[in-house]
Length: 328
Image 1 (cartoon, rainbow, N blue to C red):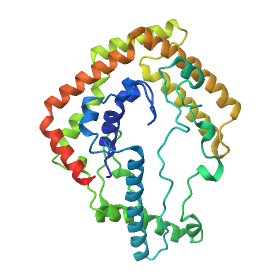
Image 2: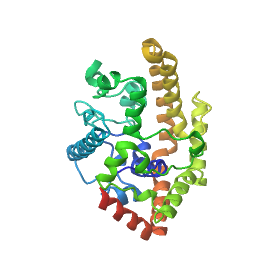
Image 3: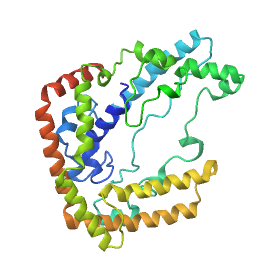
Image 4: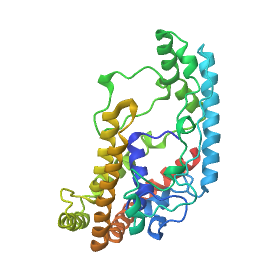
């Protein structure tokens, strides 16, 4: 199912909100708090395969991708091009060897920090060509002239959008299969619709977007972040107004190292130094979360707010979930 950017953001937040409080958890053994579903994530879990095992989810994803790529190949052939179904490895497992993702454990944080630079199973990840994305059509595309390459890409994805038609920052962009090339045609042939883009569900989508935008500004969470921020300043880590700002700061520095390095990749020494900085920051963060009961209090506020949202919009949510399940 292809969803608009707006609903992807909202539903990603919904499905992962509990986990974000303690970091991304693996399908292996996880802390009890991370396993609990919030009211909205529980509402939508069945529509998004939450009742399937990781293996069943991977199998379903692979089947969907094979069907999509076969249709794309059919379309591209009709457009006069060669096209090999571009299938990639489907494993979504984040961990190796059953290692636990446990950012509430001091031992774990002392080794991995937030799990951004170093993480469980990192040494077991595929290296070299084995773990890289390989475009099955790269050689064929390279054999075409520049004008033919342009025509190939437009047939595959549709013509580039006029910059003047691009949505403003924060606005969603409705997806039109008729302008999305063979990928759009394939999605339409599969009968995959986007309920979030329909006029029927627009009021709910707008309400969900506003709900998550406003959640962090509630007095309860503002006070909680203020207590955590004061604790961090006392620990020699000032400048963070909200708990997620600490983790985001490492992500931003990591991205900067990659951008500066270009194709050669970031300097290993610089990344190792950032990894040490990450651990130091994450340990201070863990101390302050424990001192302020951050995880428990934030989850309690979130669950109450989500339950109120469910109560206020139950009929619309049930109608939306029904459309999601019909198209899944």
